[in-house]
Each structure stands twice: as C-alpha cells, then as structure tokens.
Length: 210
Image (cartoon, rainbow, N blue to C red; front, side, top):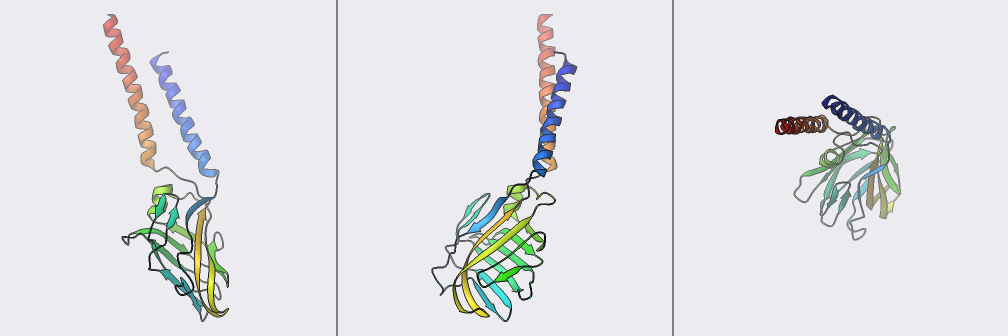
C-alpha cells in the first residue's frame, strides 16, 4: 500500500468516527442525572414546608446519598429558593457535597405541584442543569435535550393548604454527551502521529535495504 493510499484510508476512518459522533448526538436516550432516597427518619425532620402558596425546602443534615451518573456522594445537602407554586412558579435547586462544593444546579422557570409531589420538566418548565455532575458526565448538554426533576412527598403533617413533608428525588435528561473540541483535536493529532510514524518506518526500512 502506498503512503498516499494509507493516508486516504486513515482520513476516511477519521470521517467515519466523526460521523458516528454526530449520529450519537441526535439519538437521544433518557439518562438519570441524580437521585436520592428520602434521607429523613420521619416527619419530625421534613425537607419541605408548604404554606401560603409558597414551597420552601432544603436539607442541611447528614444521611443524604446523592446517586449521580458520575458516582455517588454521601452527606449531600441541598437548597431551594422559596417557590410560589400556586400558581406555578420557578426557582433554583442547588446540591452540595460534604465539603460544601457545588455538585449540581437546576434552574426552572415554572413547576407543577400537588399534595403528593413537586417538579418541573421541559419544554413547559424550561429546566436548565449545570455544575460538575453535568460537566463531567456530558461535557455539555446537547441542544434539544429535555430535562426533568421531581420530588415525591411522604410523611406529610398538616392540611393540604399548610403542611410539612419529607421527600425522595429524581432527575433525568434526554441530552447526549457532546465531545468538546479538544477531544476532536486529540483524535486528529493521534492520526497525524500514526501517519508520521509509518512514514519514518518506511524511510528507515528503505535505507536499510539500500
């Protein structure tokens, strides 16, 4: 095989890999981003309080294990901005590891609420996820992906108009990983190295034969 033919075949291989990456980006599947089981031992340690049409919540204790697509984190805490949920309102959720470093941030423009749960989803809720869990797991989220999160309430104490509750949580996305430009540069650089190495070997072999 000539040097030109080998170069052409390698170029075709690179194009095929790039095409596969593009196809995978548009074949959306649902990925669980983060989830946790109810960390509260009972109604005496609620995660949320609903009163006067406003839902407030968070967890500052221990025992919450956040299971994410990049690994599990123990003793996670979270905060949520007070959210007017009647009518539907938006807000921000933030999850922090045991060293108080941000793991995941979820912003939502609107939400759905009932006595048994609370959450939001694209496209109506305009949910945006960011933070290290997203950056490590996805690089960046693909355009057109749909994000969703929900809390399932338990151990409610009070009335439907005024109560406290514990909760479990889950979140997901249909986005697919998008490799950053540096990854494609490394791929091209690696191909260039292979071609250069083959050429050096060919030249060396020719000298030895001479």
